[in-house]
Each structure stands twice: as C-alpha cells, then as structure tokens.
Image 1 (tube, one colour):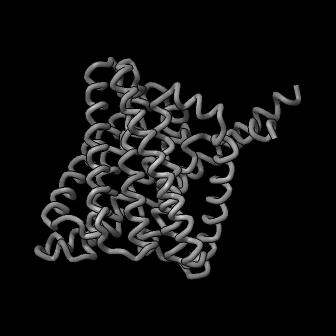
Image 2 (tube, rainbow, N blue to C red):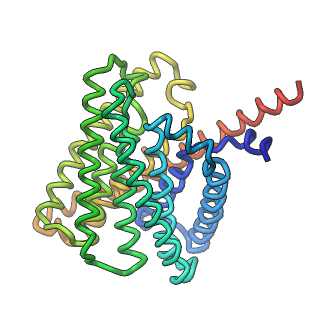
Length: 344
C-alpha cells in the first residue's frame, strides 16, 4: 500500500479537479454542441473519476499523521475546503443527471453538511493561527472558507429542493465574513512581504473573484438577498475578475520571460484547477443572473451578456482541456522518473 501511495502522489487539494469539471456540467455544457451519447459518456467518466479521487484522498490524508501536519501548517488546512466544495459540486451534477436516487443523495448531502461544520472549526483555527503567526505567507487558499460554505448552500438548494431556508442568509453572510477576513489577511501579507509577480503571486489568488461568484450564485438561487445586492455583487465580481486576470496575464509574461515556455507557462500544479473552477463559476453566476431575469431592465446589456456567455463557455472548456493535458503530462513524467529510480 505504501508503495502505491508513493507512486500516485495524491495532493490534499486534488478534489479541486472535481470542482473544475463539475461546474462545467452544471451550466457551461449547455452552450457546447454535444450529442446526448457523448454527454452521457462524459458524465460517467466524471462520476468514476470523482469517486477514484475521493477514495484516494481519503486513503492518503484521513489519518493522524496528516492531521498533525495540517495543525503545524495552518495555511494548508484551508485546502480541506476543496473536499467540501467538490462533494457539493459532485452531488449537484449527480442530481442534475439523475445518476443516483434522491434518497442516497440526501444522505451524502447531510454528511457533507456535517463536514462543513467541522471545516468551519478548522477555518477558525486557521485564522487564529494567521493572526498569531504573522510570518505565515497567505494566499487565495484561505478564501476556500467562503467557497466551501456557499457550495453547501447551493447543494442544499438543489438536493433538498428548498428555495428559501431560514438559515440560508446566515450561512451566506458567514461566507462573506470569512471572505472579508481572508482577504484582509492577504492584503496585509502583500504589503508586508517582499515578493515578485513571477513567483510571489499564487494560482489560488483567482479565488478572490471566484469566492464572490459562488456567493452571488448562492444568493440569486436562494433569493436570500435583494436584486440590488446581487447586481452590486455581480459588478464587484466582474471588476475584481478583470483586475485579477489582468495581473495573471502580466504574471504569465514575466514567468515566460524568466522561466521560458515549458517551466514558466506549461508547468502543472494542483492549484491551477482553482482557475478552471473560478472561470466556470463566473460563467454560472452570470448565466443564472440572466436566466432569473435580473438583466431584463436593459435590452442591450442582456444581449451583450448572451454573446459573452457563448464565448466564455468555449474559453472555459479550452482552459479545462489544456489543464487536463498538463495534468496527464505531469503524471506521466512523474511515473517515468519513479520507474527509472526503482530500476537503478
């Protein structure tokens, strides 16, 4: 078993892959011309792959050694948020395509809600450690606290068929509070630390806008807040999206210049899946806002949004294909190296 673990090398945040693919099956896939047979095949592949990832992550990381390691590295503890958000996304997809019966989905959803309660305690511990140990480097991973909470709100909406629940506004607000706390720690760290754009800017910083996108999606689906609030959140999310992704483009240029194409641009890391998820979530947020008729006050805006959604859906899929190729390539290289080492 130990040898198999070393060969596979499953990261703590590996479920982010499920988040990235799952969000595409929620709404993005509606804008992609696929035959019903191909779509069904992709869903089956997604389901099986997700089950494998969940199983391997459980084998690797649910043990006392991993718990002790997480307690010593409080930043990494936020990566558990990918487990919650991935399971939420997974259940939403299974519900949408009727892969499992509703009774089974409900039971798993309840387990995920319990996991969220545990993770909220982990986040409290993590934030306290960040306050005490100011030398710790902070990045967008802390915003997974918000993503996980809002993902469960959305999961509850779909699985339990509940448009409005008394605790929903409370949980969405809790997610926003975690967002403010996490972003504050990030800004303080940016100002305090000397860093370069090529190496100091983390892939997970795209969650700056992704966490707001999923908050907006939770708000518009559950109708927990006013339309004015949702539209204001959409504007803020869009502004932050363009700011963050502009920084990403500049960072890409710097990394290409410093490390060249292979190591600077096409170098795989598990945190890159966060970009795929946030891109898909940005699409889903805008699509849902338009589908709910919140943009009908302007015919021009509604038309522009429709065009944007068609273009952005293609971009989301292209980025997902590229990331999948980078993932496969990196794993093949890793297995090749380990095989050579074992031979020698």
